Image (cartoon, rainbow, N blue to C red; front, side, top):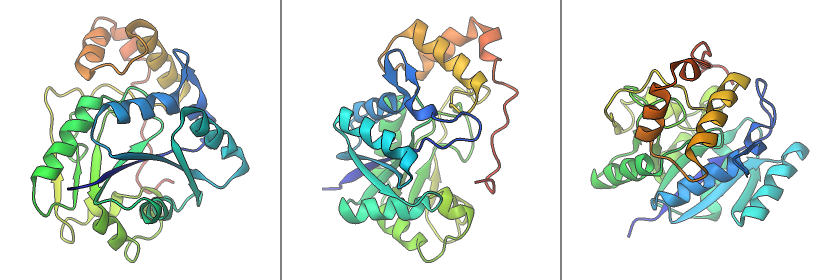
Length: 243
């Protein structure tokens, strides 16, 4: 039977919105919301939060202890090594990668991505972001454990920070599949990186409740509130080469 490990990368260091993963949304931290959504997907056999060895991230470890989720600590910028150390300690066949700045993560999207990945023999990596139709903050990605181990000898520089970027930028070396979901909602930005992102996400959570909410419901609610939906439209995502 295939074993799937979920790894949530989380740290308090953020240039644009420091401490964002421990901010509270609807009475829960952002990190807790990501952990709950990952669990609710039913796609992971085990979930580990991978944070750094920096003293500032003692707070992340403490939050993991409160939530009862395993926490592992490793390098600050070499996130690939962080992931591989977790894999060494928690062997699995595949890894679902989560980032702790996606508090509106939809469990159903995660579950669908994992199901498609496991249905395709020999696949190394699947992501929903190759031909983007989902809002930022809702993407799902899953990789074969052996493919991640293979990156250790190939990935350098920012590819070690972004963990999976070498996989999808070298499709000649790996079997990569892009999953495209409809309708196209890529105009929305539902990730948390700036104060304007926070304003939008806080509004969604206040209106739609504490449990993970299907993307369709979020999109419909925002469609009736174009001013809020546009609150973070000006925010530019960092380029891949930017750590």
